[in-house]
Amino acid sequence: MLTLTLTLTRTLTLTPTLTLTLTLTKAELKTTLKEVGDLEAASTAHAASLKKQQAAAAQELKRLQAERQAVAVANGERQRFFEEKGRQLEAEEAEVAALGAPLEGRESCLKMVQAELAAAQQSAQKLATAATAAEETRKKREAEAASLTGKNKGRVSALRMQIESEASVALQQQKYVALLGGRLAEDSP
Image (cartoon, rainbow, N blue to C red; front, side, top):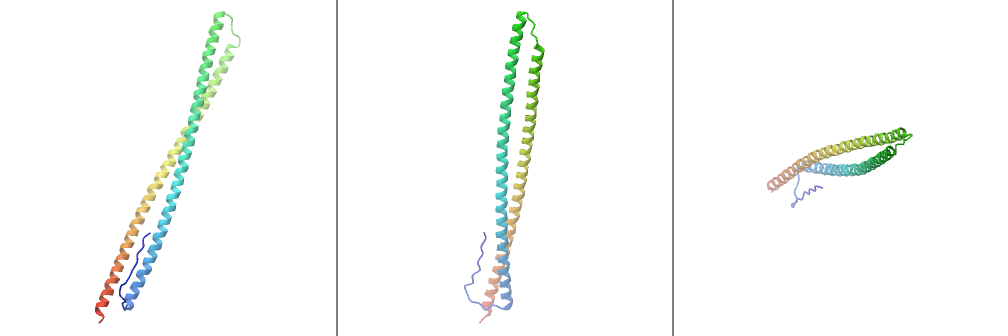
């Protein structure tokens, strides 16, 4: 917070104009300091809100990544299971063919295994689509957070420039009041 103090080391007899100028300057300084405080509070609140949003987005991303990993593991297990059952089926078919006895229902078993594979692949496709959508959502939220950060930096920069400008004006006014006070002291016998 910016604090300015005006101290006069001499007692001066102030003219009405000088008194009015001093009063207006003090009022302007008080208003400026209040506005600076309000702007700093708003900036702090905005930064806290942005930090909460970023933390929530990061948490969501972690959850989605864990879910995506679990889906990939489940899909891998299903694929291994299918391959193992496929090898078993091939071995059994070779054994039956070697014996020369026709296997009744062989086609129905094959269709059943193919149906299970199709269902597993369809489930994997749905989960991959959901993971892609979640990744897009994460990227969108990340872009929104970056946009908010950029806007906040611009606002903070503009506020700093305004504060510096108003502080400079207040300093110039204090110098002017001191100069008038000095002149008044010189003019007084």
